[in-house]
Amino acid sequence: MSRKFDVVVIGAGPGGYVAAIRAAQHGMSVACIDEWKNRDGKHAFGGTCLNAGCIPSKAMLESSELYHRAGHEFKKHGIKTGELGLDIAAMQKRRAGIVRQLTGGIAGLFKANKVEGLVGHGKLLAGRKVEFTPDDGDPEILEAKSVILASGSAPIELPFARFDGETIIDSWDALELEAIPERLGVIGAGVIGLELGSVWSRLGSKVTILEAMDDFLFMADRDVANVAARDFKKQGLDIQLGAKVTAAKAGKKGVKVEYDDKAGSHAIEVDKLIVAVGRKPYTEGLLADDAGIQLDDRGFIVVDEDCRTRVKGVFAVGDSVRGPMLAHKSSEEGVMAADLIAGEIAEVNYNVIPSVIYTAPEIAWVGKTEAEVKESGRPYKKGSFPFAANGRAKAMEQTTGMVKIISAEDDDEVLGVHIVGPMAGELISEAVLALEFSASTEDIQRTIHAHPSLAESIHEAALAVDKRALNYMN
Ligand code: FAD
Ligand code: AMP
Image 1 (cartoon, rainbow, N blue to C red):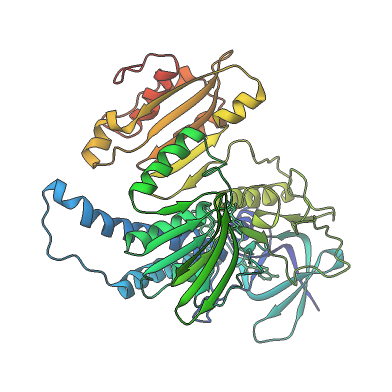
Image 2 (cartoon, rainbow, N blue to C red):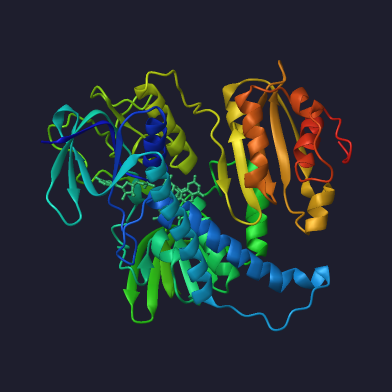
């Protein structure tokens, strides 16, 4: 006899595990199947985000930034240290510990919410049946009233630079290096490439990032991207734009990387090469031939605005469906799917999803860039405020960057907020809320911000939109 559940979720990343918990909160019986294995061969819930993405990268960014600041800023604060040193093993142990705690936390949450966490492979069959194959057992058929697919994504591999796990590596390997490479190459100056490049550059690697596009951070506002590019250069990150990598050959002495740019063909030698050219949807072994689920030409599971596939009762959320590959987008889709299954009204506001790059300075934005507003034809006004004029930023010795706000000329609606500077990833939440509530610039202008705080820069930027900043010449 097969087991029956109201909802079966396949995948326990931020899309799947959150969907499972939300469905259980509605009183439904829920199973969540997940097959993730860490490098130690042990299973852990949490998917890419907790095990190999968001969390370990932020742990390494924090450690490396502290090291960098101790070497470069402590003196200014009047703090003397002995000789500064690094213990990479201890740093990696801390990273692994944080991951272990958080992924273990999901197992605890599953228990508390009565979600049946099943370790092994899940495959969608026809008729909302799911074949569950445990790691060490025979396949079992689960019957579900509804199914949520949340199988996530995997790194894109370049045909001429195959991952070997040693010298040509993906982002996961790059987070777990046990020694600091002297010369590190990174293909791709996207979010992941910049974050990983920053980590190892701060720890002492000579980092070269090769990016095929001519524009730096093409998806970000130009003013913000320009400030960030200048600062990364100052930090010693060598970012080559318009540099298309054509070959990478691993040898005894490292990797020879060949690339073309406007000036011609070039080659560099590095000890390790991180390939960070994006991610692709992961659906291997997920769908039986007769499951009825449609994939698009790039391999994404086809869904509508509500994350419904074309099979009744089967939803798909997260990195394996269209939209930005972000943990918070995945989770919100998971909640929406569970709420819709429970018969509630639910939606995801795809226009208001924050983007954050956790470099130093951090980069964060929500809504439209100035170029996008211009393109839309809607008349607009804009204002910005530099952190150099913010008291808290000065006290923190973190004055690089600014807040820029773009608003509609006609009804004053805030259309986009762009931040480059300290704690941008935290500051952006106020802007996200403002856009979610369709706030006007005046709403932010009239909101009292604590003093001294970095957030005052958002207040001042809103004032600057109407040329009335108080602590800066308009
Ligand atoms: P995943 O997290 O990939 O989870 C999918 C899970 O499903 C996995 O555990 C997988 O093993 C399992 N699975 C797949 N198929 C099956 C099957 N058939 N049976 C059983 N189990 C299956 N996003 C942010 O928002 N902020 C960040 O700071 C950030 N940093 C990142 C840094 C790095 C280095 C990387 C690589 C990614 C980062 N991301 C970040 C992206 C984020 O990790 C993803 O957007 C997010 O994990 C997607 O969630 P998901 O649930 O769709 O998929
Ligand atoms: P993201 O999709 O944000 O992770 O960024 C990946 C980046 O890798 C993009 O900016 C691509 O332009 C870049 N990229 C892809 N292929 C190559 C290549 N062969 N050489 C250099 N950069 C590349």
